[in-house]
Image (cartoon, rainbow, N blue to C red; front, side, top):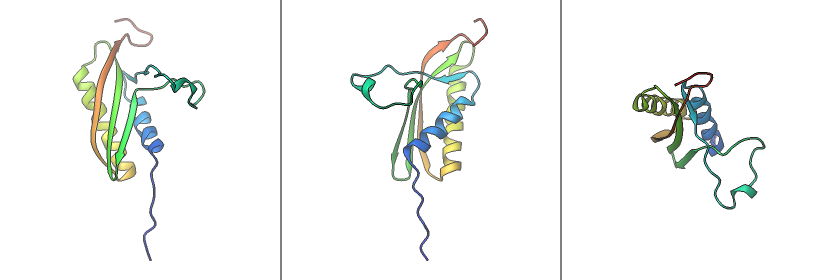
Length: 116
């Protein structure tokens, strides 16, 4: 008897990455400006487009993320934490291989409810 195949959609990979990122203190996925024509595309109401992209080639996944990091946190340390957490969660939950998690720090922001 053949083993049934399970297909994992790109949206699931995006959700795993986004949920992982939401759980990392002092970071948030940056919003990305809309490109010409994207305003008319169907998007989830009330959600801003986020700087998060997942590319899949067979069993290999690459994640590109733009982050806002709170002032006072180590940028490289936080980026490494993000890379490790996203890689571990995607690989653990899907069995796919994460080739790279590319992090771009887009903004340094004042902590919510606090001062720099």
